[in-house]
Length: 70
Image 1 (cartoon, rainbow, N blue to C red):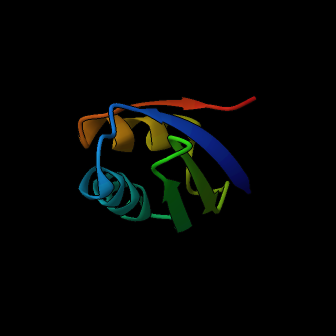
Image 2: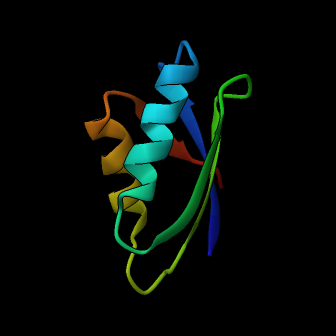
Image 3: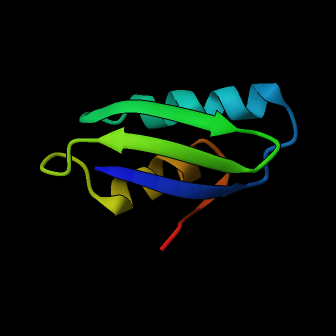
């Protein structure tokens, strides 16, 4: 499964790297790529292991606000 998330609060490459790391550490996430300029993240994950709430919590725990694109 692939999802696009909008991430608020990122100001620099370090912020983007922190969000990317937080997402990739969620068990079942195969890949996460954060685009700082677009304030978005593309996440590829195993839908049997990962819920949308888990992705949002990872972003929140890293100190940012995430929203899933519909």
